[in-house]
Image (cartoon, rainbow, N blue to C red):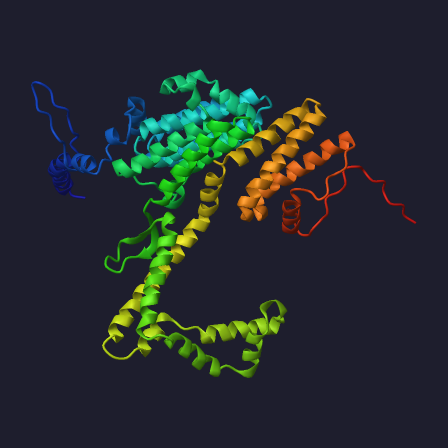
Length: 532
């Protein structure tokens, strides 16, 4: 190789590097803060773009010099190092080496402080997986709290990430409020001054459900006011979390013996939050015709309005040529086969399998769409009828989506539940059953029986006013447990089981739901039948 050519090539390379330093400096120059002597600089193109889109580290959250140093030290191997640390953390967890496990998690977050899944997954790991490894409930609570503190660190680094706020709300509300040891956890959480004092939280607001609700609301506020994006959970569920926490709070305090005005106020707040949730605009998978890239939005609380709009539009269409739809149905029925017409004449409960199939086919063949009706209208109103038919179809589709989304969150049930639970009869019913359980636990059987009788009388009043609750599964399971405990009280008192029983319809409905009716057994134990 010619030495002169080699030297010339090196000169070219050095010159190219020097030239490339200019655009590199223009692109990556960091921003500087202004001082009294210098106005500062917005930085290069990349720094300005990060500032414009609010993805600079200062916008994401707290800046940690240690984290920045570690990231620089690993150059292009940060992903490899993160995988190694994640595997080490899992290995330490399997070995129950909790000190090294915690230290490794800290290293992992220093390496990737803005990778949300690390904070989310490892907080779950601490609160759910590690906590169950301990026998003492205080140790389990301590590890749940470690998961909460881990999420707090994540929020400091990622202040505009609503997923972490949602994870915080879930851990505080669900892990503490639904765990097997939830009674103990709830008590420890309320008494945890170290945690609550940081937020200047008064004692009445220290309930885990209320604190969880607060965190959920912070996440929603991030989306509504600061333009944050909630990834991995749609608005339908994301916005239901805070109202559901209030529902769970109201339910929890009644289970613990708080009733009357406090319970009523809690359910009133739950009802109001659920009403507001029903008025939130929620995007759907439908696309707007006037803006194909924009979703159609719905409100869960506007189902009646949507149905009324469909009914009004349909009445206008039918009024253009009264009786036309029925005429089209008759024409289609005349084209049915004899066996299909016979199947339609048989009551549904008496049809054979083949007749059900024939009736279904006949129903499909005689169905009349709104567009069919509009096409049969003649004269100057025809185009108006076609437009009206299209609008009816669109409105029906929106109503269908409202129903579908309401079913996902059980909207109607919780709306009705929050309203009914405010009534004095249901509060008195739960209060008397609670006092009956206390008396039963203290061995005061007569008092327990009397409280149960009073409570079931109140339940009868509630059920008579809301007959749909008789077949409600959630309430039914609770009342079946009440009936069984009442029967045990009567057994110990040697009292006969009352006939007719005041909640017999609830018992029958729940037994049918479970697969077959069963009579309430008598209070007095019977001898086993003799077998030959």
